[in-house]
Amino acid sequence: MGKHINDALRNTRYYCELILALAVVALAMAHRHAWPVASMTSALQRENWHSVIHFSENSYFSWRLNTLVFEAAQALCGEGCLDAGVAIIQLAILFFGYSWLLVVAAGGSVLSAALTSALFCYGVSFLWGADLLITGSLAWMPWLMALLLKVKTKDCRIITRMFLIFCVAYMLAGSANQLAILLAPAALIGIGEWHPLKQEQDAPARGRMAALFILILLPAALTLWQAPRPDFPPYPGLSHVVPHTGVPGMVRPLIGPAAPSVAIIDRNFVRHNYAFISLWALILSFALAYIIGLKRSKHRSAVTALTLFVLVALDTLPSESTSQIMPLAVLARTIPHLFYFSLTGLTLAVGFLFLILWLHQVRSSSEYKKQKIAYLGLLVVVALFLLTPHALGRKFAAGALQDPESLKVWHEFLDKFPDRHSDQAKRIEKSVISPSYAMLRNEGLWPVLAYEELKDTSFKPVSEAHTLYVDSSGNKARKLLNLTGKHARRWSLKKGRQEGDEWLAVYFKKPQPLRGVELYLGDFKHDFPRGVRLSFKAECHPEEDLKPEAFKGYTLALEIPKWQGAPGFTPQGHPYYSAQSNVKLFLRKPLRAQCLHIQQIAKEPNFDWSLVELRLWHK
Image (cartoon, one colour):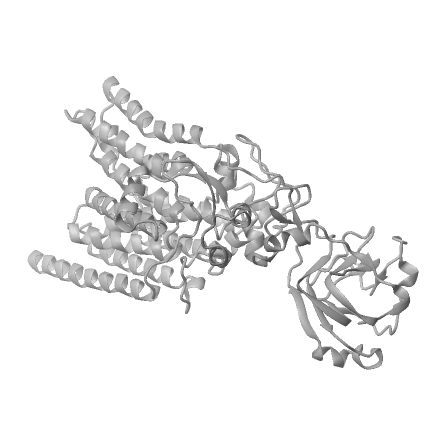
């Protein structure tokens, strides 16, 4: 009877391994392109710290590459594909280290461990592409964990093993940089099989354990201490570069370098892209933990995975005001230099590392029922990767959890300035590799290309005697002459709110050469349009072309679904969004218009849309 059960178990493992292999192939086929490009500018410099901008999250921080990885990537593919070469080498290091960790932690065949490791590595590539921050942070962590599992305090070779642990910890710090201060303790905490160290409680054993902790944390602490603060442009007050999150005031770090004057991380993007996968990862982990059951002494990796997924969920699911007091945000504000990073993606990736480690441990057990559940769990993880909303039916070049449009500005810059040596190219590159990237991602390169023109704008009031207005309330030929210069009075539809269907039509007696239109608010700073659309007609007649049915024949000049503010520039030429009450609509190209149709296209429940004066920029 026992022989038949063992044969059944072996056959089940064989078929499950085959299904898992097919799942990995399905994941690879779903990727549908050669290799995802890097998601952050690195200006790949040998051994030097340099400022980096993350294309999707807009994190802006100092970074440097591991010297050995840099040399290997340069030898592998030269300068042409250095970013991808670095990512490939880091994923290869991760693959071999994770395979070894799976064998050490759970036993089983090397082939089975390699298959599971391939699943994890391809999942990382699938979700984050060639993100050097993610791949660099994870690359050496499994090696450190595997070495920790091999340590025994009474082993005569413990000095050699501790030296190897220090070397790997040094490589981890050199690859993960500031983030190593979190990954090194995570490697210590997440190991469930610490019995070799815990069984011996004599003084020499405790001393060696303390030395081990110091050896692991010392390189991370030194790297954090050496990391320079990135070079921030001096943005003025009330400016911003990322969309507003709804958090009143500026969130600042509690400890460490002073915060920049603007929020730099695009929290709207982080919450939108990570909320789905963090929720389902949390549900999956709890379901598996409930079905399989946890034994505290045996499944520390499961508890670690659950904890990490809870942290990501708390960071992405509540309101932004609540998220700011959650553990990941508090960590970023209390550990020097981490304020410049978004910890959400890295925490999620490390959570998957521990989840798959735990499932592999269960899969290598002798309990038939738990084996089946572990295989099913791995297949659900594959499905979770594939069903990420941004991966459905889309060919992407930067990973399913990255913004597929985020690379356009960088590629637009490289196309316009292939040599990057001219003074204009150097000036624009400084603006691109800066916190202003998020603004350029929304606007395109036009603000920095038109910098010389935009910095000397001059908006002048229109001649009200030669201007007619019609608004969406039906007031025809209404003049704003009586409002000029009197800020206490204004034009408004007097709704007390913005419903997204308000408009104002303007007729000029003579066609006007236009480069911009300002909707001057005077003292009514909160009445700016939450979204705006500007259309025009070169020649028109007020009796015919100021009627609602005629607006379909107008040409669209500008559409901004969510008004952020007019572009402004620092003295060094870095663009930013000024206050939202500064409603200056800059046109991408000059035009001539005799009729304008100005629409308010968003919703705001508490404030009117109003203006005191219409001003034009002629150029």
